[in-house]
Length: 500
Length: 97
Image 1 (spheres, rainbow over the protein chains, first blue to last red):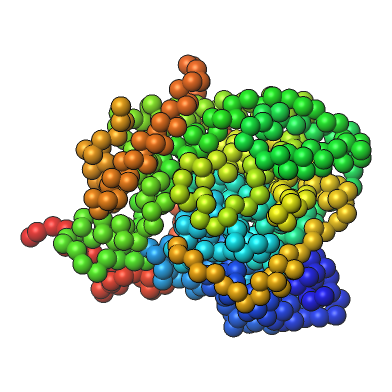
Image 2: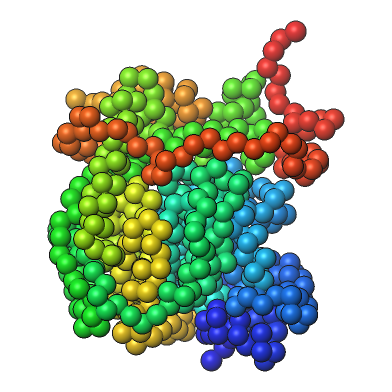
């Protein structure tokens, strides 16, 4: 067993005890990345020199007793839409192909203050727009469980890296399911916090009213510890919420006695893979055996979440991505005639097809004559969806659901039909619209050997309830989910040609 | 009936500051018609009297004293500019003198 088979908390403990150093941990991560990257392509940038320098500094501060946190010395991968000072931050887009931010995102800075070590930046769908990591301008990422399948998205690189034991932890962002859905496809644990819990300062904006940064890890304990490290009130983010407390790890308890778990019947109907349904309902039974109270109910409005989400997120994206103009940073077209032609050509050559599709749609729904019919309508539906969750949380503590309608699809299968790709987010987008926290954790493998993810949703600021339920379920399922080692071994060295 | 015509695509292209090739414009028209048709599912819902919700939590303006907190980051910020001149971003000429 190598160091990368340890969880983040186990690794941090050994470093603290002096059994190994932060440099050992970083070197093990770099070796694992070196071995697997050719097959997986989880990373867009790996920074061996910078990571080892950080490790030396952290190690010194651990030895002087200055750094006492549980994650000190642990290597972490960061999604490439989080700014890292002096290190490439491309959002997997040609338009930011050479962007080195002059500052670091607050979530990453918090992580570094806790002694976490940034080892590199992970692949993603371009500007987080996609559900498979296939819209990246710099090549696809493969699912470590089966290299013919996608890792999900948009945080596909972050989830694949953790699943493949390239590093124990990563940061992702979730606008409509971009942490929870790839966590499900890759068999890892990911959490989208309540809106406003983790600062968005330095997160390249996609849909500002929906975006949240969150942790990705191998188990619920690591996930809670990483959330505790990155969450903070930040006056640099005007939507940051001052929470009463930032403790999440005290909820790591095996106890669901009396916990009311809602099972929305309309999340288990048509469109859900039978194996996924059985696995999720089987897991619910395990919680019931441990004292939880299962309550079936109708959530309502389920088919309306995706259209509302795409109107709102595309509208916000069209406004947020107006900043990419070829002047301040990134790509500028080589040939143009005057200012407007420079804007248009830089943007048209710099953005990929999916990003352009959403900017066009967003510009349309915000345009005069259509604003009321589409954008305002979607905001009203958002209010109704929030009310539906409020009603649900009147009679249950957490909601248990699938994270995605199926396990990971094959590479190339989703891009042909954008609407079909959008439907893979059907169980995740509502939490973003309503601002709720959601935890995705693996519960079983399907008959193809691909992981099935279960989602626990809580009411706003109720992360501790979903962490407690998730932790209990993880214990009931026998502790740690297995590693996709065999697949990595079997297909060793074989790299399939793929056009992106 | 198509919701989106060639003219709409041309107009949205101006709003979005995107220059689409003929092929791309054709595809965009098709995609957008397809997506808008799907999105009109929302019209099944009666939203009469519902207040549009832009943010989940009530948010208000956050004020602070007007004091400079950041340092002089001019060089760091300009280091990413595709073109610069004398400590400023260099853009194509916008006004004729």
